[in-house]
Image (cartoon, rainbow, N blue to C red):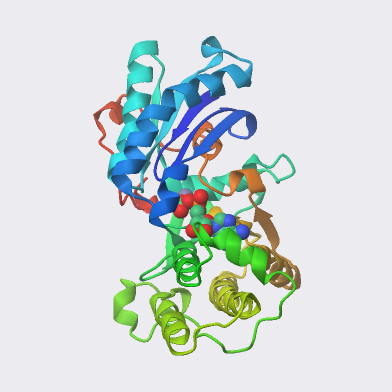
Length: 347
Ligand code: KG4
Ligand code: ZN
């Protein structure tokens, strides 16, 4: 199966052609620069920019794939979760293409696709060898931990109850005057520095009732961390770039430490787990990568990290997941609206 994938759930306009779920023939992604001046993604602006850019991105993905339209067997697009108005652009375009060409239409879950993105690395093992596994989807919009028993057999075991890890980093960077998106800036300036122990709180949940029935020890709250940074910056404004960098390094260590601790707990709760799969924009973070490598090596668990090109939002993960037989296919898909909060377990 050679599938055209389309992704427009946030501020990346992306199209890709993937063969048999894993072989990326092309992947063209445009990150909208228009949001930078606002310090965050503006949904209305995102959908307008997708609308303008998507046709040329799809054409480029088809051209670069080398297979042409005649080589495409199905069209897959992100149905959710994501920003409603942004999702509508890609999902409607996919419906239009499928109607015009007569190709099957497949609705794909964005978070499940982030987990699948690890298999776009040719060096990754066969998915069948990886289960049971723990999955971490960590991005600007999500911080979710899953237990995966088979393709499509996925259970959410932990999540953030407020800000996502990427959002927490982006907000901190804004407070520290480091620009948007903040994750990469914080990662860059923290290099070579040693975080100070206990500089920021760990993101613990104090009232398990807000975890919606999930184990509170596998959930995080990053809003307190952000408040603590705000208090710190207001009470003692950093006096030099070096001081800003040290605060950023401490903050990053608190976010990463909280996430790694929850991954460790999820792995301990699932001793049969063979792999830890990690996808999403924040999985580019160097400290997170190092810490996860250490902890999985200690446990004899295989760490599957998405290739850098497939960590952020991209359409290859959408076409890839559809190529593995996942998602909702036509004729049902033609009746579907976008689903901005579509849970992985329901897809
Ligand atoms: O997956 P993604 O492209 O979009 C969402 O679905 O949100 O993730 C974007 C997030 C942003 O919050 C950005 O700051 C973060 O990923 N990010 C990083 C790094 N690169 C991107 N966070 C930490 N370290 C990085 N190197
Ligand atoms: Zn994403």
